[in-house]
Length: 290
Image 1 (cartoon, one colour):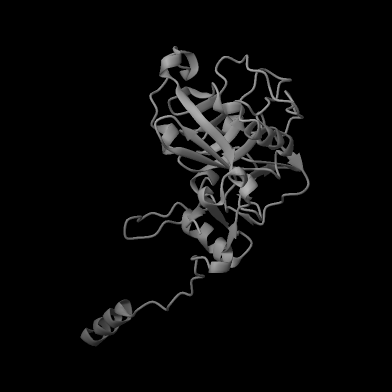
Image 2 (spheres, one colour):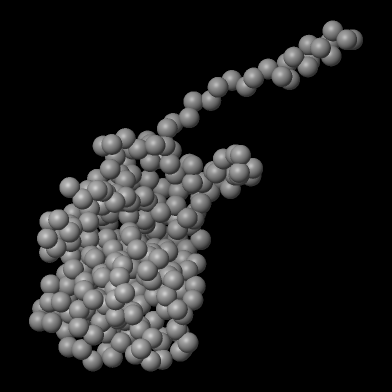
């Protein structure tokens, strides 16, 4: 009997067979440079910048407007952050809604809320998305959601959308907002998403909340003035910020998804077995200025 118990004890203590885990760390070649004309830099009064990557391939008409507005320096005179609603959005542009748009800017472009065909995901999350049949990632580093034949950019924290009036208005792109709270996914497919804040979101998320309806500031003095908005491609070479997104069509990114869906010990003792797309946003990094 003693020999049997000893044998059982030795079996229980035997180490488990090693498990081969695909590495999730990226290779140098997995990082892809974001073009300068997709990088929009907004400088705020009091210092600090907010940098947005523009989703040129997903909302081309609205992004075209945004590029024209930046080239015309439209936000530089009178532009401001004029709305900050707690757990929702920070919004900027023309608080008066009276400033004329520059030549060539379309007041209401076609709705670019979703699309069919093209921009198919190259990697997907394991579980069904609460607001869509699936969620995943495009080849060029954007979060995606989709149902049936439709695909769209989801309203996650830091994503940038075009403020608009009631339909059929689609918004010109002169007034923009970014989500600064729990992802307002009910906005998906109702507003054009044109980008993502990739640096400086804290400049907006820490601003005082507006005390007016929907978080609008009641007085001009409460607003944060915009000093300038420029495409990185229009900045002097020495002042241009450079960013890279992580490529998604490789086994290392697939393994990264698994790490987001199943957090590991010692801190996490119960893996979730899945993740919300807004809790697994594709990585972006800033590069040193050459």
